[in-house]
Length: 419
Image (cartoon, rainbow, N blue to C red):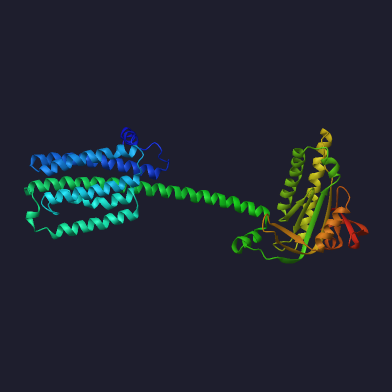
């Protein structure tokens, strides 16, 4: 359809019509069908005039005016549902008049158009209205079929050759109109499929974002369990290694920074920590203020968790020292760090129904936090259990027994270097 014809048809669209393409296509189809039937009505009228069928001439003049005015009435804002019902009623009425006056159901030139009634009402109104007109059309056919043999019931008859001319015109019109209807349905279907595919792609993107966000909060295994069952079963891990870090004089330094500067600084350091522990398959648990907490050996068990954690701690310490060296030269603020590491058993699970969090509990966690508190700036302080698990891979300095809160005295060791 050319752009000029499309623009002309669109000039009959109601001013308040929505931007929905399906609705626009249905309105365009209604307008097109009415103008086409107007042309066929004129053709019928001219042919009726030449064969002397007076009722046909008057009926087609009225019909041509009726169908020609439909697009203009639609433009005024009358709902398409109402226009569809009017179309159905008039089609039934017109067929009844012409069949009664032109030789019966199987002779009348407009009989084929009864087929249009219920599909047109279905497209432009609704299923209930279309079903009513379908029943009405069936009754119409049955009634006029019964009176087929009563020739006196039909005041006008005409030669077979004229009948063939009328029938050819009617069938041509039906073919053209049904083509327009099916073409509209095909375009609507294709558009619906396109939207469905686009929506599916959008949902897949959103799902990928949600999955990524979930995996940023929970370990992979826990996230999958939570998605499948809606809950995550707490688990006890007998042998893992927990690490805590915190910044030295954090409170004092933070008082000298704006809120934006403080968040930017913490994000700079903790993002680097994230990258480092990921290299060793260590699970980040959470950050609490300036404290960073992570664990090795869960949810996937590992025989090298203590070794991996100390390696990560050394890398973190190197990052801190490198940043410190650069910032000392430029006169910028920097942080020193204390690190504490402990090995033992923990309970792990998901807590909360809103803003849920994956966390670990147990004496191993508490001791790791105390080891960090009792470390020195720039040192990695480990427990006896961690020392035993990694003694073959690293050099340690024995600190002896040091008292910690709620635990008494525990053996502590500084990590010196890798062997």
